[in-house]
Length: 93
Image 1 (cartoon, one colour):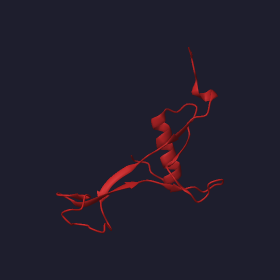
Image 2: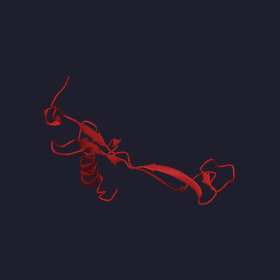
Image 3: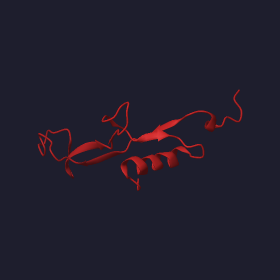
Image 4: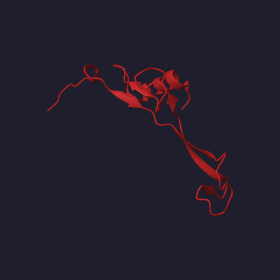
């Protein structure tokens, strides 16, 4: 049995997956009745995911979900909001 486990003694990281469904901009069959991305009310739709390009080695230049280390006094929600603000300048989720 584990008692009084404090996460400050270990390292935890969080990743933020921010998704958005929006009107498609360049769908090949955009607007066609048989297009599976078509919504009868809004036209074709696409799913977008928020990524950022890493600035430091060892994976400099690669695309990634925003995230990072969980602070000792943070819960998951606070940590994700901080990571989004620091890495991709998103403050309102």
